[in-house]
Image 1 (cartoon, rainbow, N blue to C red):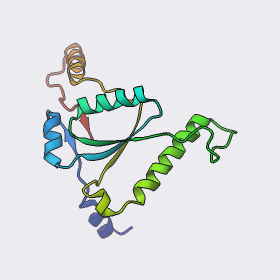
Image 2 (image 1 turned 30 degrees about the vertical axis):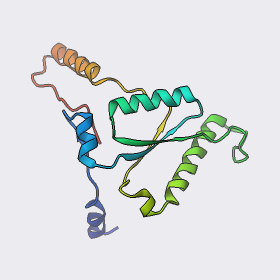
Image 3 (image 1 turned 90 degrees about the vertical axis):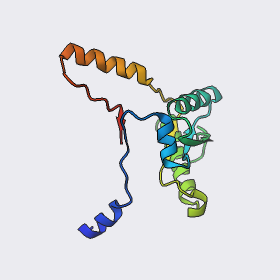
Image 4 (image 1 turned 180 degrees about the vertical axis):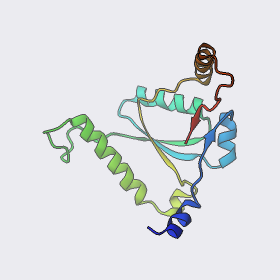
Length: 150
């Protein structure tokens, strides 16, 4: 790939650094919520994941539930780990579904997020407390306030 082509492709990329921003700022700064899928076959786990993500980033995602591929699916070979095969096929089905959608359907969704139903989000207050303890113990002068970056 030539240098000019890679420069053209990178013009549309944007890095996001979440540093001392409230979740409401993140949601409002972009506008339309990002399209997100939660892969889950168990309602309680789906609801737990949904609540954690909504609490951490309210208004940031438009959630959809995706049932995992059945362990009895004919595409799964019985020689390997059935759970891993099911999850892999679920991701493939999602990618195919997303790829088949038109630009009009996807609108402003230049990013689509896929979550499994086992996320664990650590509250910001715990992270701050954790880093404060470490920095005090190691006698650092100015702790880095970045909690997440992409």
